[in-house]
Length: 67
Image (cartoon, rainbow, N blue to C red; front, side, top):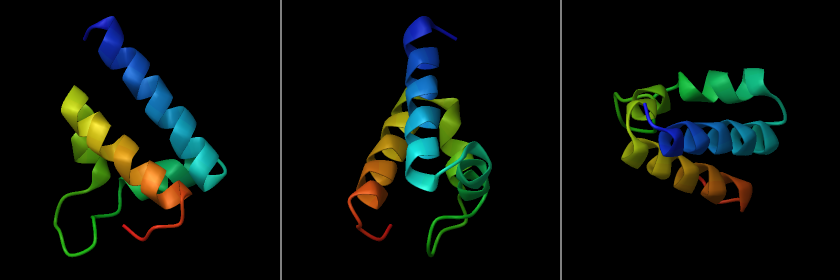
């Protein structure tokens, strides 16, 4: 893992905690499959591109958009 990847992951967790109110609720969200999909957000944590997708989803949630 490189530093950029780790920094993105930390930023994702910080945003997730802000959106959901605490880390426990954010981690619960990571384990719930996306609507109409079999994939859980947790599966996207393996790549930098996946983290970008999750950041986008969290930003949409923060602005009130359903995802």
